[in-house]
Length: 456
Image (cartoon, rainbow, N blue to C red; front, side, top):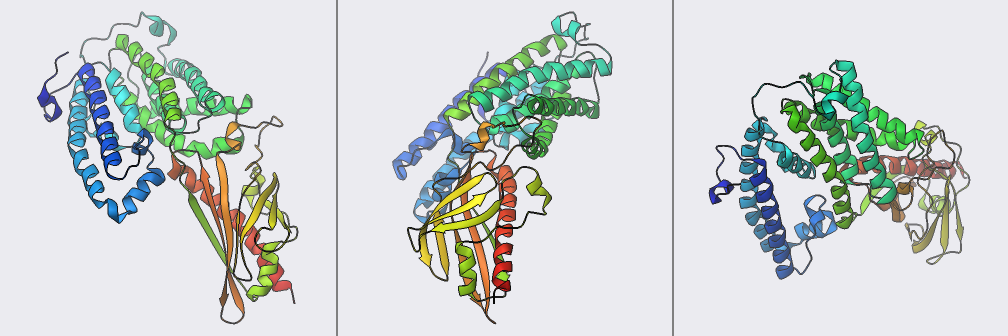
């Protein structure tokens, strides 16, 4: 293993996997400790590994704090040399592995860059030598026909990926980057490399094998009562996109000498449990998110207020989304009056217990949340399944109803929910949770609107 200082800035030539892996680990350790030192010496806040993947409230406060302008510039300027070194090292490693240079863009994608680094640290150099007939274990296991190789690739992929999924969800109870990014990425890579073990396949053929692996994994999770239909359906779009990235990388690497493919696949398999453990150990802080929904009501605020504090049974929902097992509100009850009273918003899975924190009649009703039911009942052939993500992954923190008088004796009623969830990537799952909360808000607000407008 030959290392030169110029490796850190030269973009020409190639770089073998050993020096690439060593330099990557050393530079990552240096960057982390430099960021940690800068944070501690200026603002006194600790720097966590998870901030590189999920900024969280700590980083957001830093960005929005005008007194931290000097620190922001220091973090930016000190990151430039590491960014340059990472890009040039990755470019040279891609050349060595016979992969297209434009794949360097994966170096800048959170979490995928970690998987990308692992792959490049394992892939051997491209050697253009004639392929010998597969005589090893994989060569004997994998048929030469397309359908035979596809079926065996699905089987060989689904076994370790199912175990990794169960490890993350049932044992570690982590619904994060490794589960939703790492597993589908690995499934795509494994499917492409294994299905093309004896001869090259087209990208569409490789992705077809990947889709078969994803469908089988979803079916197994459903059949073995680990997950329900709704959760699998919500995760499917993200899994398909990430799996395509893994498939493409496997497709580009399919000409790797087949006798060396075994060490590459084994190395990736060993890396996945370590990623799950590392993610759990550096679990990021779940960001607080807010969802606001409003409706205009043809009634004055004092009349609307009475139906905000508590309301009668809401008619059965007509929206298809509430027929999938998602919890939805039925009625609201209150014990007491004023700040300190306790409101119960009853959902199909149980009541939200909401102690009143602000009682400004008829303008603002604000409350905390001390207890909440499961966010859904899983749609599944098996009764009574309860995946770990139903307990504590989605947490409603507080809420409020704001009543604003409008001209003509009308009222603008706005409902807001502040919540956190421990599903990552936050941006993707936030789209789902925001949309669902908007539907829940709309169900309550329209009911209040109907009650207030019908009252005379």
